[in-house]
Image (cartoon, rainbow, N blue to C red; front, side, top):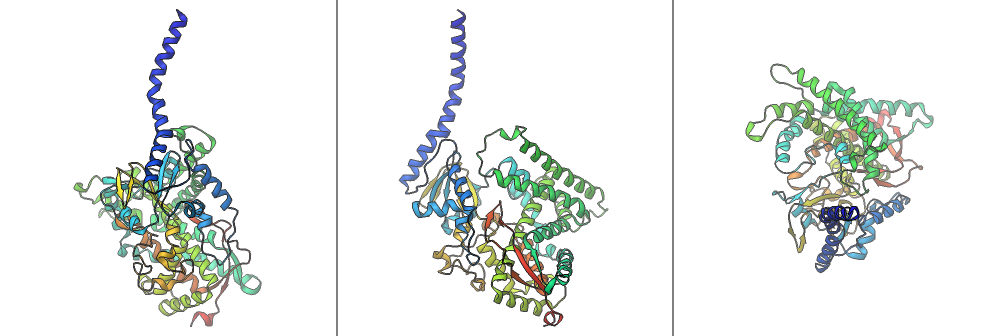
Length: 525
């Protein structure tokens, strides 16, 4: 009888488990097989699916192999290094590819028309995919990640803080931070033999843009803002290392050593930001003036928002928006400046042309927003740097329902990948010199730079265009102008050309640049 009882319990337990087992089989085996057949009939192929891990193991291996490659310094074709999977798969399977991020299908799209259709959709059919807890801890669950009505509400509150008029006021703060760094460069160069100094420029720009975002976001609370930034910077290294890991639901609750460290860093960031926000709320004057930095402008916009537009931002929501400012604002600007200086150090003719424009429009004074607006060549050079070395090499969207995309049927919950680094180098859209540094292509603006008006996607297009693009361009112009006023830049012989995607495009071995102060006579040209 006892034996029969045990069998009955085991049988009952098995019956209870069967739906779960079927769900696992359906997700991990049946659905990938069915979708592979469905896409195959549409002419879309890709690497074969591996149980549970999908294409991730192959992608990891390709990434590891690519990390060993050092490119020729004059080569701007970075696709083999930063998107090695597409470099291998596209010649074999075509420009539209199906691959697997674990058990999730990903369709790679390289057609700008289809990219526009995805990014310009206003009805929530292609949403930002839900990020892993580690990524959310790093970037913040701010306006860049939320979807639907919540995104509409956040964007409406955040937008006014990034208006051109509000940003013009911040140029002086950007200049103040830059002058401090440039004075250090000058003193080090003057003290060195030959009055020139080798500087690891990527590290310098990371510190500079961190200081600028802390000043422009938190004003007088700079020291507290800097502390939050340092913790977030540590978080980035953790996230980059774990990006291609298979995410198992619930695994982020396991107290592994790396998870515990992540929780500590996230708590440190949040506590620092909460203290800053509470201090700002408590110091508000009777006119409800919270300050003219980004934090103050967003708190004011939230407090003054119409109740019809939704409730004002909570403390946690403001914290998440501040985390987004820190990561997006710091990473975009520092890497844009890094790669722009790299290109100018190789193309000395363009460095000379830009310096002449800067000295003509700004002299040796601190540039203001009106002066920066007249730097047409600088704008062209920055846009070309963004094309060749875009901080974000690939973006993703998730289909919220079964969708028709061109001739393709995209199933619900499938991811769509838009590889910017690949589209920005397509000879079909950019001509035979697609891999060449040629800022003149932007002389008539972004829409006329290529054969297709939507071939440039550095800031995205459509309703979710990067809210901080004006801030990033203004900051990059200001810093670049002040550097060119004071120094000549040349590439160190120690440099290894090895761009790497650490959630943002960075030089793997840094960027050593030899800076030499300009003579007084040259500065007064």
